[in-house]
Image 1 (cartoon, rainbow, N blue to C red):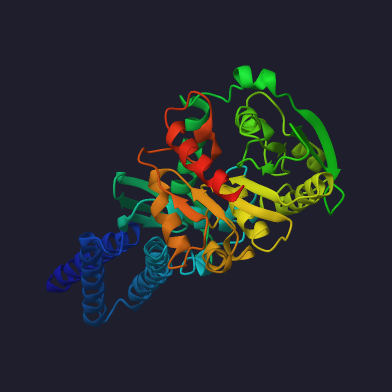
Image 2 (image 1 turned 180 degrees about the vertical axis):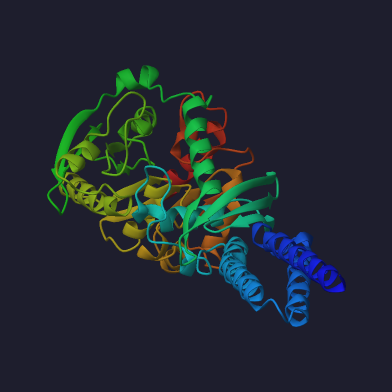
Length: 433
């Protein structure tokens, strides 16, 4: 009778031990820094102790012990395998990248397949650089839930508040998808679609100064399309470059204003761009027809070709003007191109990752006149890029009093921020004339 009671007690102990182990495996479903993580681990450890006690006590049930031990080992190996998927290092690298304003810490954990929506993976380094550089200060970033291949992360940015999103990983622990970045890109796209900023409206000056269509070839044979606003061959000339996703229409009411100020202007469709204001990007369409990848970085050869075209036509140096990514290309190209007289950049940044030198190096060496500006929220990052460089004559960063906008669109007719930007820009143009 005592033997039966003993077996019954041991069987109960077995069941309790296995249940505790099963509960303890829940540790893999909570974040490592969660208080519940340690609780689950204690339960798992206690379950193992209970089963070891049962195993040592049971002398006449070896087969059952083997079965129980096998079950324990399976559960343990499964648990440890899952627990090995620890993404804390990746999150720490992400946090360091935001703190350092570069992606150096994060790069070892970025999969080659990491991309955002329809944007090609080749642009991922530049996008990530832009994200960690231009988002506000990160207060904290912690894992709140995790499982194999996915972690739910809580973010807290200054001025943006707290939010939650998922980061996805491959079998090696490299990041394959970042929902936060996808959401930010989608929000920006939606904001552009719904923005209250008026589209460029040439108005009376557009009627007074009309454009002529022109074409010329880039180094790789791609035909670059543009519109030439010419008033006098003896007047200075400005090359106008649009921002990402845009085309020549970004300058349809800026170019006539520059004509009125006494400048010839050429606005071109870069191969990296798209339909804007109901008009197609002709160069981009031709690049796709030829099977060329219309990457932002490849647009520099379009700029070089346009400078050569204008220099040959007018026999004078060109003022190079860029918007967003093209302003960075303008600085990179203009710094060493002897055919460039001065550079104007609206919202330049390090958009190209390691594929191009940082603008910090460009600003430290450039000797030509330049005028760079941005929205007010972007100005701190731009100031850091300029760094401690000693500004030469006619080199300046204009920081607006207003909130401003990203890119050259801040100058469009009807834009409430336009006046202070135009005032500063006109002073610069007069100084370098």
